[in-house]
Image 1 (cartoon, one colour):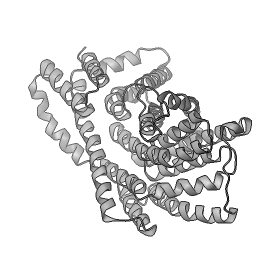
Image 2 (image 1 turned 60 degrees about the vertical axis):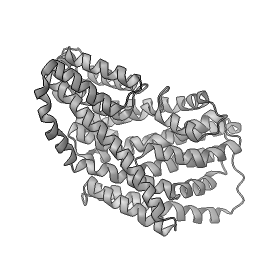
Image 3 (image 1 turned 60 degrees about the horizontal axis):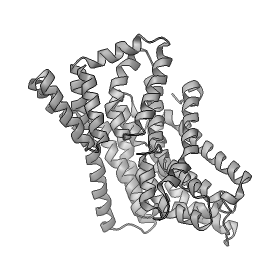
Image 4 (image 1 turned 45 degrees about the horizontal axis):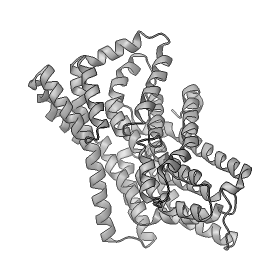
Length: 426
């Protein structure tokens, strides 16, 4: 009963718009003291210290730093501009280039907000100027920007690795094929739509020669690609841990900004401040969620949840279906970090008891949480794009545009559920 009250009050506070970190901490403190007594929180300093000493979580600020460097120094802009010209000659070419650059930014930053804003500022005006169908243009940008949720180095994979006790390197490897599958689905959808209805996505008029476009594209794409291969390759080859590779990525992003002549100490100061803000938010939520999970656990609620799922017919498949539905529905209303710290610790003991592969389960959760960025009314990518879109573009236009991409994400999620042996690299 304590767990239900705790969970219900926390959800109500989140829906009312209270701060995530302080909601978790405050509700846990009030309910915990009222039910279990004040002595329970004598353990909190040790838990906070364990978080601060966690070397896996050190990767979070460095990957965030890497992503913001690429955004603030204009490297993401160069990628988008050159690839848009390269593919612009075909119907839907700018949309295809947006998807490809979204995948590259995802693999080099893992920061969804940075990707959506960068592509919204650069790609959206080009598509609108070229008379692209507005919902489709908005949907492509939102969906491509959220690829950072599943394509490594994803921040949510690092968080899930810590919450679920799974090696982050294993999660990065397992996420590669599902992430690439999403890119393929998006690209094929746009190409088919461009073939059937070219008036929705007219080709660009390109004046440069193919050779000039190719040379410029190589200049802008190859260096970031080398950075991606350095970061992920060092993890997959076992040369570096995710934490060490995040440091490689942070330094590599600075080196790229120097090579392109966009480095300045003023920009680095701005990047550092942004990194501190985002990192502080993540760790504040983590500390609040630790208090929440401690009260939930010591009240015996996790055993009630486990007993409930274990008694259901259908075994692990019933649990997987219900867990995915719960996360999908919650994603309409609350943020992915809240779900990762609030819901996943509740589901984890059941998954262990049912002998479910935790790497596979974490990838399913990550893909589901990616959908939460697109689902109205509170999908973060929708608000990121609305913030940089022309004032005359309606929010409902963005909502309409993301519907096909939400359906494609659910399709890929179902494929990963049904065929893990083919789609998950162990």
